[in-house]
Amino acid sequence: IRAHAENVSDTTLSTSVGLADVHVSTVEHLMSALWGIGIDNLIVELSAQEVPIMDGSAAPFIYLINTVGIVEQQAAKQFIRIKREIKVTQGDAEASLTPYHGFKAGYTFVADHPVYNRHPKYSELDFSDTSYVDAVSRARSFGLIKELEQAQAINKCRGSSLANAVAIDDFAVLNEGGLRYDDEFVKHKLLDVIGDLYLLGKPILGAFHGHKSGHALNNKLARALLRCEDAWEL
Image 1 (cartoon, rainbow, N blue to C red):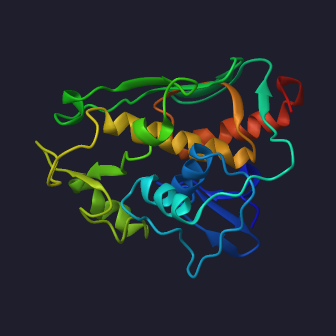
Image 2: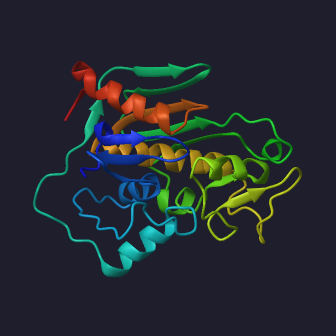
């Protein structure tokens, strides 16, 4: 299955890609890791229909890939340069790409909860002077304990545990050691965005901004960009 935005088959709580009746779920963390260390030519072989969740972040993938090493190839690296704004909306959520020299991403996390309200809900990072590996890659998936049963009822998050996600009850983070970043919640949203957009097949030169966007809107933005051929160039 080509890892491409047009092959995205499901965006319920994660991003899946599919071809005919074959589907692979939860590709976004691995895709984000590949963007973070500049890999754009890779075959991923799986023994099941889901990418391993690891610890809920992109960091283990980066560590393991760096352990075996990265090969530089002779071909010129290609980028998608944004030439004009592309914006998509869904209710009060929106996601956009605008021209920018380099790549930066900003995200506004919208959720009213005692735990979420104690932590930053906005983050904007310019990756010309910010390390993805240091600032973003360790941010884990997260969720409210009271929402887990509902997710598992639709066959999602069935393997969730404190080893692979940040769990939140009515008042606190349940994981020993707490959060890895004070803004880990919004940083994980950025991690997801980067992975979803890397399904365009090439890194973007431009600026992303998301407000309450999730996997569905991220993919909608990627598909909208591909349709608007005057909005970008290689």
